[in-house]
Each structure stands twice: as structure tokens, then as C-alpha cells.
Image (cartoon, rainbow, N blue to C red; front, side):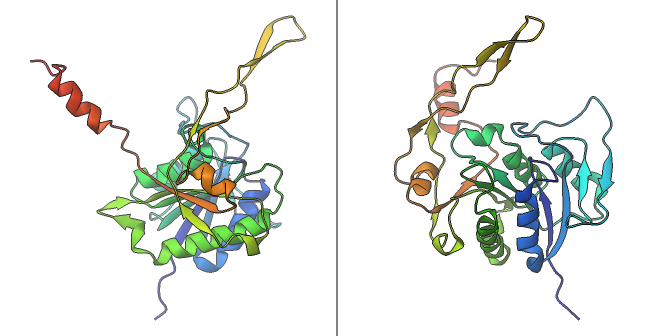
Length: 262
């Protein structure tokens, strides 16, 4: 009797037609049974948003290099949430997301739809990995996908997948380099950015003011051990993250300063 193959759910935020998604899927096909459920359109910056104001539709691609992919008219979180709560017969063993066009480092992870898809898996007890390529434009995407394969393979054989009953969440950023140069991995913490650039104000054809969100801020804290430092050294950055946003040290300080009442 053959050993059961791991089931890997793949999503992204750039949409099901994105080259990064196709490259990632092709790279990990040898590692298990693959299900692809991705947004119909680009949802970069969607974070963990769920679509609650309308129903969602799922369509299956027939033919071509994306044959068998599913796409949803919703967000990355919608994709994984729907998969986990009824579309799939059973939970997958791993959720992977990407490969995103552009880095997700520092505070980017709070806005990223790529990271959000992996987070949604973790919320259902399934380990998640978010993959991003540093520079936009899909240069060296096949090399990045080979590196992503190696990270996924490591996760599938590692006891890290679930630690103390909690599913592991990894945020992985990959330099746009040849695969031969992507053998150096660094386990990192999130760095820190300056505030975002100001909004760009323009006039619409009707004379109304319109506002474009400004670019992400420059690096503020990128010392050794951060994701920014690893990338500057030409390494793959792998950041373990958690969903607990409670400030535990401040909890104790507030309680000792009379914030608990009654």
C-alpha cells in the first residue's frame, strides 16, 4: 500500500493568471497532491479581508497550463476560507501562497494578501507558508520557484510544521537571483519601516480630487537578524510568525497600574 501523499493547497493574491502562482505550482507538484484556489483578479494589499456583502463563485480552469486551477471572485482569504469550510472534503496538510510579485517584509505583512492566505490556513490549524520575490517584474521567477520547492520540502519533513499544537506560519522572501545563488537561508525577525510615503493627489476628469496610496516607507530598522538584512546579504529570509497580537509585557504593566477594575 503506497504512502499517503501530502495535500497542498496553493493560493496567492496576484490572481490565478499570475506567473508566480504557475511557477510555484509547477515547482511543488512532485511533493504531493496539489489543489489551487486563487482569486480571479489581483488583490494585493487585501490583507485578511473576507467578502461578506455578496456570494462568491468558484470556477475551474479547463485546458491550458492552468488546467484544473480553481478561481474565486473574492480575496485570498476568501479562497482559503471557502476551501477549509466546505469546498474541500478534508483539510490540506499545508497551505502555501505566492509567489508574490514584490517583497513582503517588515510591516508589509500586515497588509499583504499573500501572507493573509497563509494566515487563514493557520487559523484552521494548517501550517502556512507565504512566498514573495523581492523585485517586481517576475525576473528569475523559475529560480525563485525552485527555492520555494526546497522550503516546502523542508517543511513537509520537519517537526516544525506543528509545534506545541500550533500550526507554523512562515513568511519567506526570495531575492531575484539564479537558483545556484539561493542556497543561503536565514531565519529572521521582521524589520521595521518608516511611515508610508504621502498619498499622491490628482484631479479626476470631472475635477474631483482623487488619492493614490503612497509607496511603502524606506527601511528604518534592518539590523542583523532582520528580514531586510538577510535580503541585503543575498540570502533567502524565512520569518516564523504568530497570530497572537497580545502585548503580554504591557498586560502586566497595565494590571499593576490599576487598569483592571471591578
